[in-house]
Amino acid sequence: MTKSKADEEDYWNSSKFKAFTFDDEDDEFSRLKESKQAVNSIRRLVEEDDDEEDVEKISWSGEPVGRKTKGGNFQQFTDSLTDSSLRLYAPELRKPKSEYKDSISDWLVLFQDYISDWSPEETVQRMQHGKAVSLEKFRSLQDKLLLLDFSVSANDGNVITAVLIYLKRTLSKELLFRELQSRQTALRHLICYLRESRDHRLLQELFRALGRTEDVAYKEHLSIADENKRRDFLKSCLGLPFSPEDFSLVQDHYTLLERQIIIEATDRQAERGGKLEIFQKFPRKASILNMPLITTLYYCCFYHYSEAEGTFSSPLNVRQTFKISEKQFFVTALAARAKLKAWSDVDALFTCRNWLGFTKKKSPLSFQRVVDVLQKNSAPTQTYRDLKDRQQLLGYRGKVERGSAEERKIDELLTNQQIRWKN
Image 1 (cartoon, rainbow, N blue to C red):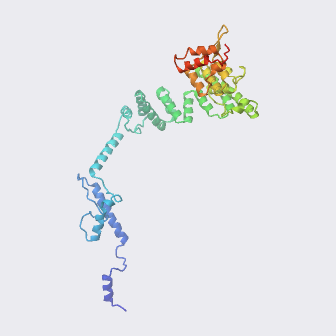
Image 2: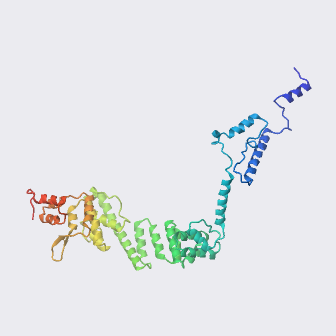
Image 3: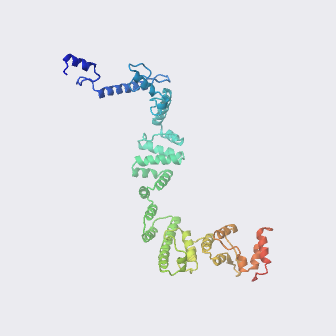
């Protein structure tokens, strides 16, 4: 059925479908305009400067919520946005202006305080009080050195370190090292900082610039992994201009490492060959190389206690070579022999002989410390009874508290007819 031209025009004008024409605005473009209007409305609300706490809410169409619109359905949609159940997902776009004004004003005060033109002395004082400051404005060498001098005068290590980090970043190494030569306090702080941060390369360059070749040599020897090469390097360092105290330490270090290399080679071969029974019962848990002196002494007391004094691994030889005190040697030997439960050796440690040839029991340690060591290693409690030494037991009875359980136990042993005392 054909329609007349007038009927077709009435159809298209009255129908909900409209014909496409290039003159009509695109739906996408229309929605973009509406979004732009909403953004502009929000921007005007943010930029306005009144003191009202109540802020007018804006719908997504750009119109204030609550204003009458032509469509009732759209009014219901905008009202639903203000429902409390939806606020979790669609929060308000703005806080009350008083909160914004307070936070912005506080931020402006802090920022203005941060960028203010403080002098080097005032900057150091503010750093001492924990306030934020900017060191970037101190660009001239004079200002940087003043900043360093005032931080040293303040006797605040944290401030000195912070200033040194800034100078390390902004000055050349040569210039920084030269200026620190006349500022020993700051120099010590920089050396400590470089050691803590493990910047070994810069630390070695600093030592070279200061002419401290011995410190450079010490740092280099730590980086040598091979023990033989490290020993040879330490030997070559003995010709450097060390102080008497440092020279003695380097000499002992070289001697100890040389001794450890010999002991390690011998014991490794004996352990593999199964020649010594002690290595079978108590296998070595670690190498002795690069161990401290006391650890080396403990090792020798544990594995080589009965060796002649002329050998490198003899505990007495180690004691004599490195001038270990009697008390330190006693503690180390007691711990090692008690660990092995060699109680005859432990008893011999307490036996000393005077110039007349008489023997007596003596300990450089307090009785409590000796008991602690023996108790940790499960020492036998009936020593005097097992030795059948009545005189020693009587002497010990006079040292315990009267009426105590120890005294009663000693009395029981002394009156025991089954024990055959040897004296």
